[in-house]
Image 1 (cartoon, rainbow, N blue to C red):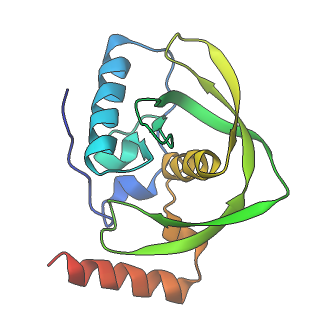
Image 2 (tube, rainbow, N blue to C red; image 1 turned 180 degrees about the horizontal axis):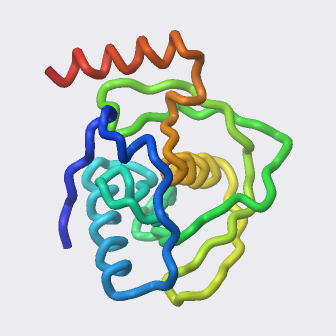
Length: 165
């Protein structure tokens, strides 16, 4: 498999909604495999296809302790979200060197097309829930800094740019 490069924060694709996936093909499976390799190389707990410039509604998450438990999703959508919220420090390889505490629902129920080409509904809690919501944001053209005030977002983007020069 292949570790793919991340597109920069300024790239228009990172701020655009990705296209739905009609069915799970061999190409989709190969992209998922590359995404898992790329996620593991970060290292991180999730990755959405637009982060590597692929404008398809594909995501992978693995918030397990031992790794190797990646959930592969096409067209994920949140069906239900907990009223209880939790803050996690979030970051993105598309905006290197910065992070921010983002508050999100502690648990979510997500519907997605799985690797068997079947519609699946699954509950995610804690870091798993945070990661899947973070990836769905990417599929919708949002990044974690979009959850911040405009001033805080601008400061983090500028700090990231300075750090990558």
